[in-house]
Structure formats: structure tokens, C-alpha cells
Image (cartoon, rainbow, N blue to C red; front, side):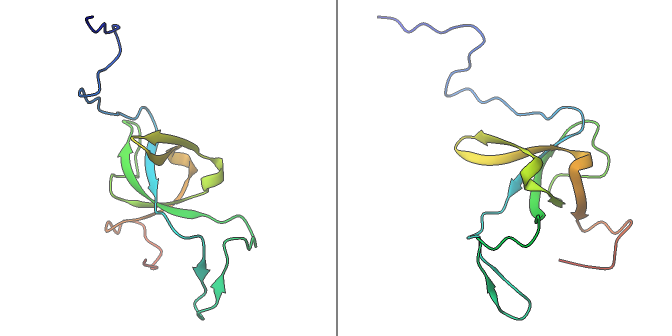
Length: 116
């Protein structure tokens, strides 16, 4: 019996490159254990909710209309308001550039004087 392939479907050995459109940014969030430490060394459990917490992530791709963010930048954003996508078993976030609050990069164009 011969294998039948449907038009428009890629085979497992054929790779398709993901290209982001317009002002979209693809971000990988660093996996953490949920616990944090304060600057004084106090352990803060993951279940402690003080306020909505922003998260840092690494930019893996940008769309054509993204102006300020580049690939390999670290960005600060609210993870609760973003769309999650799974690619080959790994989770990533897709967001608009306007949803990014800050960028940590080696470029020093309009910095705050604070460093990671």
C-alpha cells in the first residue's frame, strides 16, 4: 500500500521557517523553579502573590515592523496578557512590541543607568 500525502501538509523531514508578521515578537521565558530570593536572602515562595509581576524573557524573533527590539535582547513584559505557542515541545510567547515594558541590551541609546 502506497503512502498518500495531502497537498499543503509538510512531511516530518521538511522544515518550515517561522516568520513573525507586523509588530510581533517571539519570546522564550527562562524556566525557573518559582521561588525567588530577596536582596536580603529571604526566600519568597512561588505561591506568594504581592502584586502582578513582570517577567524577563529572551527575544528569538521579530516581525518586519518592530522598531526597538532586536533578536537576543532581554525584554520585560506581563506574561499573563500574552499568547503562548508550543513549537517542537517547547513553549514560547508571542506578543506585540507595544506590550514590552523595557529592553535589556548592550545598546546604550536611552538607558536608565541600571544594569542586569
